[in-house]
Length: 193
Ligand SMILES: Nc1ncnc2c1ncn2[C@@H]1O[C@H](COP(=O)(O)OP(=O)(O)OP(=O)(O)O)[C@@H](O)[C@H]1O
Ligand SMILES: [Mg+2]
Image (cartoon, rainbow, N blue to C red; front, side, top):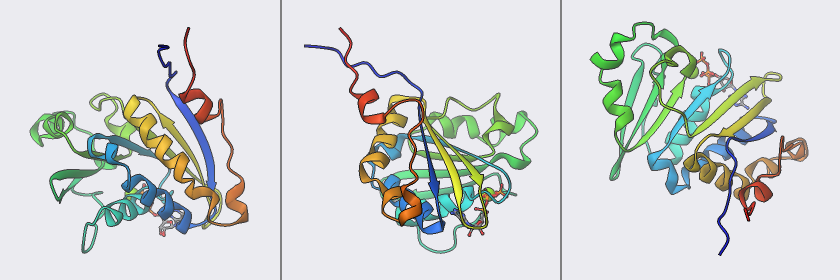
């Protein structure tokens, strides 16, 4: 029997032509059971769409009511049936003592989904993210996205996104899907001697 070798990180890039494409990605992620143990870092400038993506994701997971941005509270917790999720925004995080005092270390040591905006502001404290989403504004509605799987959990999430292929369903411009570095399918099935 041959062992399977996967070389991480694996990077995939795409263009989301509008918010519907962002929502479709969120819906695809929500359908993936690996999400229950994942840490997803969301990078990108102010207004890039990080909170919007999280809102679509939490909504797809069944969170009712208003989904607040945690810009001031730093974290918003969510109880889902049988599991937990936390949405962080580290934009205003500047005291490393808060990491211990506010219980963030305990949260990151717990099972459940952790979503973090502005992860670079807590870079010294955060563990390695399973999946990193880098969003870049193209125009009012379009976003360039780079998805980087950094762990096996991240690779599982990336594969789920890839196989549901939400980016291809939105319209002709969504077909500008570009795989960088290597094709995910061939990379994930690479066989070592
Ligand atoms: N394709 C798209 N994906 C995501 N958001 C989009 C898209 N097109 C337009 N938008 C709009 O862009 C805005 C993004 O704001 P959002 O609060 O999500 O940004 P953010 O990255 O969380 O910013 P901040 O760093 O300030 O928290 C929203 O008003 C959203 O409706
Ligand atoms: Mg935000």
